[in-house]
Image 1 (cartoon, rainbow, N blue to C red):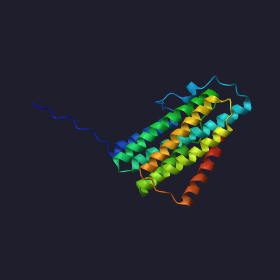
Image 2: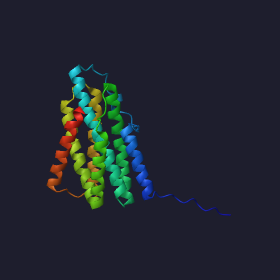
Image 3: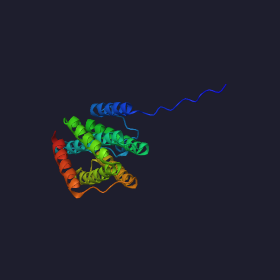
Image 4: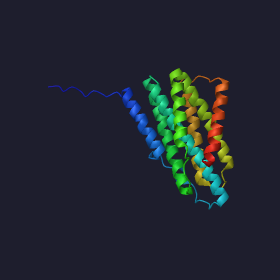
Length: 219
């Protein structure tokens, strides 16, 4: 007698909302774990940072951690809002890559004896809202936000490489790998059909990022 093959369960909207809520809680609680080893593990022995260097590195890595909190929120919201299963899978895979960055920057903050931004819930909520709005407009616009966000983050990380102490190889290897991953995400979104965002939208995104990075460096 033939047995009926088990039916694949396709997540419903309620399932996806619950998954997004779980991800938010994990992100804000620091409960994510990297799937790739931290690039810092292959760095040379750490140079002892003086007090000024430690404060500067802590501030920069806190900003980078905030960026990954926002990336989680953005990709989760976009995955929730799209109706295209292939595009949803694309956003979910990108979020998994960003999870590595989140864990790496958290680990580095712990090593430095520094804390994440106290405003992380605010940053997460803002990025999630932007992702939902972009996704509701169209998938092409949603992908356009990914491209512009990743390009801006790539530039921001390049600036951090200029500001990090040359002897802090642990932080530098993390930031360099993050920069390479962000470039890949932007290229992938372009290939998936991203729309070019209007210049005023890009300016607004840069202004919002400036406020966030300046605040997160200290708080």
